[in-house]
Every structure is written in C-alpha cells, then in structure tokens.
Length: 222
Ligand SMILES: [Zn+2]
Image (cartoon, rainbow, N blue to C red; front, side, top):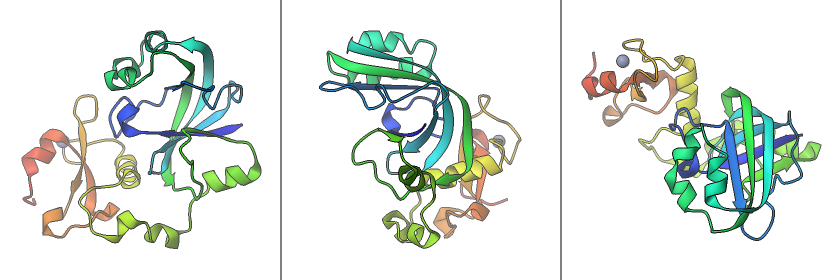
C-alpha cells in the first residue's frame, strides 16, 4: 500500500533543501497513531509538506509500535538519525503516549513536486487504501487551479518549496558559480535578476548558489 505522510517543517531534521526523510515517528496520547496496524515493509511513503507539495517518496524498511512510550524511549530509537538532535520535537511530546517509529530507505526526490487535490484534515499520515484516494493524493491539480493559489496571487520574495526543489534538482545540487556542493557549502537559491529589481520567482530567473558566492554577489549583477 502507499501512504502520504504530512510533515511540519519545524519537526523535520536536516535542512530545508535536504530534509531527513529516513525516519518518521508519531505519538498520540489518546489513540494509536494512524499507521499502527496499517503499514508493511516495502510500502511506499510519499512525503508532503504541510501546506506544501509532495516532494519525495521512500520505502518502509521497518517499523515498531510501542504501547506505553516516553519521549526518551522513542528518542533512543532514532539514534544515528538527525532527528535524535531535534530538541524542539522531543520536548513537544507528552509524558506518556502510543508511538510508532518507521524507518525508511530508497528515497527518491520527485523531479516535479505533486500538489494534490486531497486534504488531510489534520491527520499527519494518510494510508491510500482505495484507488480514489490514490488518485486524489498522487495526481497534480490542474494548472489553472495552481494559478489561483492565494500565495501565488501576489508577488512574494519567498521562493516556495516546489520551486526550490525544481531549481536545486535542475542544477544538480551544485553551486552554479563555483561548482561546490554540500556538505562543503550550504546552498541558496539566488535570483539572476534581483528580486529588488523586479526579478521573478521563475526557474529561468533562479539559480543554485552556495552561501559564499551568494553573499559575495549581493544584488550586483556580473
Ligand atoms: Zn559557489
């Protein structure tokens, strides 16, 4: 079966451009977290940003369900992942809860992010049990629907997740000015025509730049 996991940026480790998707934990105080009993090794999990697109897929390698869990116990099970160090997440958990931890592998980043029609209604995990659910979650909204997104109506300096991934993928996660890559450098998305000079957030006007090149360049054009 396929599943969609909806993640909030503040509880995902790694960087915004390369979030860690190899591990997923979920805790619920009054009931079993959604994947409990609905997940199998080899299942595909699609990662969606909360109020953003689906950007990656990965395969379930293993999972563990714990009836009476504490933050310390759950955290121990994430040893070796970046999530282990994400203090804000661990302190957000209640003293006792039902938990599930899922280990994922074979991650694949989508060339084109998916903006699904479906809504999660507050759930952070959606098993795609029927063909209708699959269709609603794993196919893109029509382009004319994308254009009426409120966030696209005004000109904004912020470059959305979908656009960032598109540009980073196109540029091979490499600085287009000096050729360096992470972890040696941190990557930014740079406007060719500066935003302050009317440059748009469109792929033709965006380029992957490392932090030193980006800062050195400022708003002057070469
Ligand atoms: Zn550079």
